[in-house]
Length: 115
Image: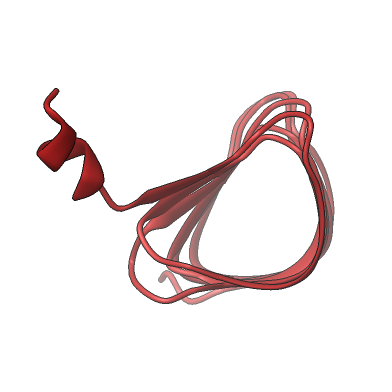
């Protein structure tokens, strides 16, 4: 991939050794592989992925979210929440669609708009 194409990619990657606390706003697909506390807002329809080994305590406002790691807080997803088999989710969830894979640990108050 040439430099110009790389510079025009729209994604965020929060690396494994990072610890972040505060209010965050992202555009494009966002990959979290660290510890994050605070508020996370997506400015577009990019997907948030909480990777295996990540720990997130936050209020999240997004379109789609896929969880492989640990999450505590609230999720407001205008699209789909996908909880993979390695996920641990605790808190309040509101999503258009919720998909839970076998093995995921879920302790949530949930609301879905799918009929």
